[in-house]
Amino acid sequence: MKNELITEVLQQMLPYLDNLQTKQLQQVLDHALFQYEIVETGIASNDDDSEKLVNIFIAAKRIEGCSEKTLKYYQTTIVAMIASIHKSVRHIQTEDLRFYLTQYQKKNRSSRVTIDNIRRILSSFFSWLEDEDYILKSPVRRIHKVKTGTNIKETYTDEDLEKMRDNCTELRDLAIIDMLASTGMRIGEMVLLNRIDINFAERECVVFGKGDKERLVYFDARTKLHLQNYLESRVDVNPALFVTIRAPHKRIHIGGIEVRLRKIGKMLGITKMHPHKFRRTLATMAIDKGMPIEQLQQLLGHKRIDTTLQYAMVKQSNVKIAHKKYIG
Image 1 (cartoon, rainbow, N blue to C red):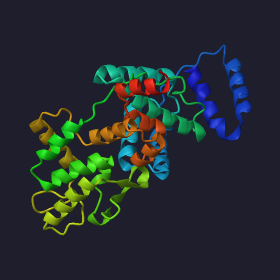
Image 2: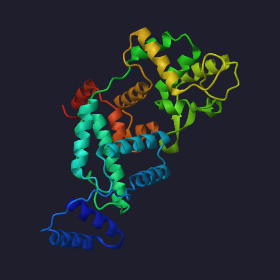
Image 3: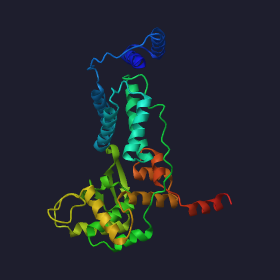
Image 4: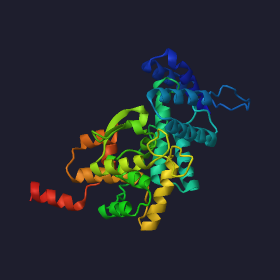
């Protein structure tokens, strides 16, 4: 209770003191209250502004360009933490967060990746509170990154892709598979495309990635032919590039494509068939064929090159060949 009181005083004085003065004030308070025991009276306090601070943080992230999906994930994660700890965000300490993460993992049987994602979100929130002088120091500072290990994620083989193409019963499905496989775009980017966005002459189109950032993606000749065949077969006037097969023909959603791909995968015996796997496959293939990582980063629309490296797996056989070429 004594430490919480000192912390609250320091936080309220943050706008008026520099770092050295704040440190000196803490030393004075520690010395002055050393021989006293502080007991909570039980009188309810109405100065908890946690909800307000969360809303301001979300607003700041929205201005930075975060998508609504990301903002919702941030808000849900932070609110769940506050509700579980039962403290104002100004009073939450490192031990509170460690206990919360431990209990969350135990209760939900969460993977280390999930726990580290929560830690990153909380770190972003409390670091922002610190930068904006709402708290003295982020309690996440001493909670280190969770070691998640390196999992080699699956990609589609050339045989998988050919099986998909050979067994598509709908021109739309064939065009979707080729579009995902040759461009490496996100599924969320593809469903937003309109017919007018496709430049068949240059075999390219503009997509809007995360943070509403525009970038060009490119497709191969086979995709061009299959896409043209699909569009010529349509009788609807919907501007969307991909629509539902049955009338009324509406723009297809992410869930619709995911369900369709799972159905195709089950029929062909291809495990874990989902849209994002096409993106990972393209990244891996590009690296294996010698595409510079900076160009791949631009193609995939990644802000950080570390993200690109997580997508691209270098085959061990290529490592052996490279060793013989450059070292052996």
